[in-house]
Image 1 (cartoon, one colour):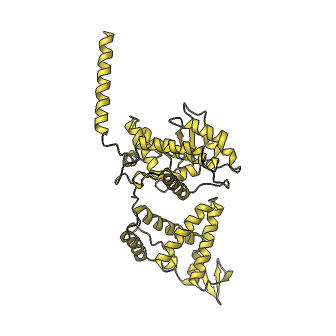
Image 2: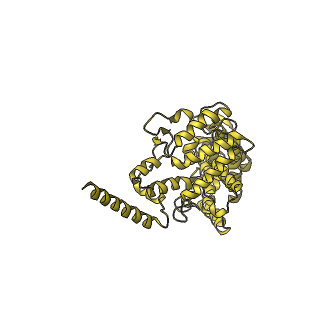
Image 3: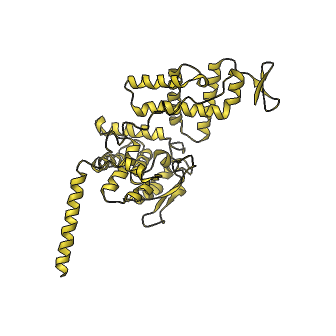
Amino acid sequence: MARVVAGLRVINGGVVAGPLPADPWEFQARCVDAFVASWRARGFSQVTIDNDIGLLERTLTALGRPAWDVTAEDVDRVVGELAVAGRKASTRREYVQIFKAFHRFLQVRKAAEIEAGFGVRLICPVDEFNASRHVGDDSPQLMPPPTPERVTEFFEFLKGRIATARKYAPAARDYALFRTLYHAGLRSDEASMLDRPDLHFGRGPFGKLHVRFGKAARTSGPRPRWVPMLDSLDLVLRWFVDDVRGRFPDSPVLFADESGGRLHRGTIRNRLRRLMQLEGRPDSDWFSPHALRRACATHNYERGVDLVAIQQLLGHWTVSSTMRYVRPSTTFIEDAYRRAVSNTLADLAGTGTST
């Protein structure tokens, strides 16, 4: 409990914790610095930190008042202005999420100081009415995932680039990283948190990834799972570990940045965007890291993999969540019909031969 005594704040029954914050903007700037320091403590790369700092600063500027004074109406206004300006749903969601993360940091680390200094008890203004829907440009409701042919072409571009890129190791890492996102159906955060000991090449018929930090569900903690290395992903990762990873600074991180730290999901997203620019494809052919995850679900479903198996692969809580990821091609019905007819004819031919 915090109270004020002669211009000082007193916390926990009389421990004087220093002078009250005077200027709210100066205090907020110090809070932002502390928030950024927590990112460094968690091992995020400097590129990721720079990107997120810029997003946070733009968000706070748009809100126009200290974070502890922001109301739900302020969030409505900023998100609405972004929508009117034609900003994508994914961009609007990023603004909301970075503010929500900063506000949560204030609640955990700075609540007593804010209440003592400014008389405000922190309550997050992001609610069910202004939280941006989890629907973006790459949503299955709006567009299909990249086709198998498009994914193959992109991987061929990445593979060819390894021999010509100015820096071999990052180019080779990109190839292995995005192959892993697609073949294992991982989220960017899950791939980022992989360590080298999480590769178990001798487990099961294909080898498996131990995804220790799977996305939490229903307020639970991280949900670990084992993901098989399908479609020769084991060969790609063996090559990466044996020939590429040693060119980065030594650390447990599997897909490390050039300092040996973890790649943040924003860095992975920006990296993919940059690679598609280098590929020279039109914007209509671009896709996101999450679209590779949806492509994994869709392409395996089209190949006849059981839906429950795909659910386990992706780490979804329910099959209904997996179904939202599956967007079959426009000829899916015709292709399924042809396969069914071919299988029937093959069975009949086999029966006729045996008799």
